[in-house]
Amino acid sequence: MDKTILQDYIDACELLKETEREINRLNQKTKTIIQDSVKGSSHEYPYIEQHFKVQGTAFTVKDDSRLRYEERLLEQRKAKAASVRRQVDEWLLTVPIRMQRIIRYKYLVGMTWEQVAVRMGRRATADSVRKELERFFEKE
Image 1 (cartoon, rainbow, N blue to C red):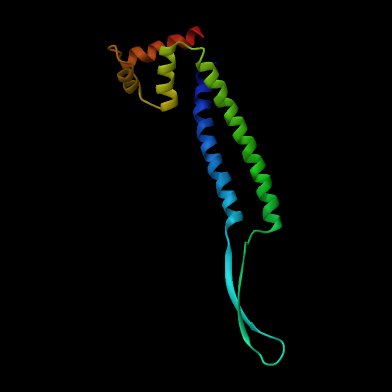
Image 2 (image 1 turned 180 degrees about the horizontal axis):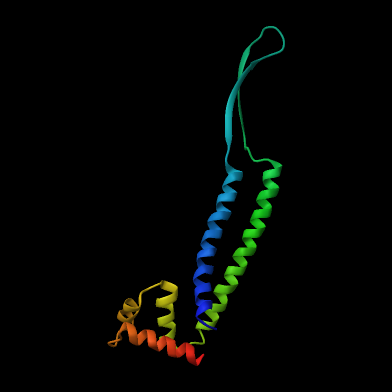
């Protein structure tokens, strides 16, 4: 496992969120109700004016098939992103705890090296924490 998988992890997490939003947007299309009112009269005498309320969706069969196709693609994308995320989580369990913290702060939370050093404590500096991570990846 190397640093690139950590970048993939970040992208995978963001992709999961984006995919969820996209699926929700597609599902909202099916729930949009359009309504209108019309008036008319009976065919026979006496012509009595009547008012009718008509409602439904603008969602057609063609839209439905496109929606199902897109939803299937999004679900596949979501599954792949979740797989990458799971791999990184499993790999992190095999790493020493100090490295887990450094990796989590730097790559998963997105802190700067200075922020990571402050979080690590024990008079750590940005350069010392960065070097510690570099040595760890060289050993891996």
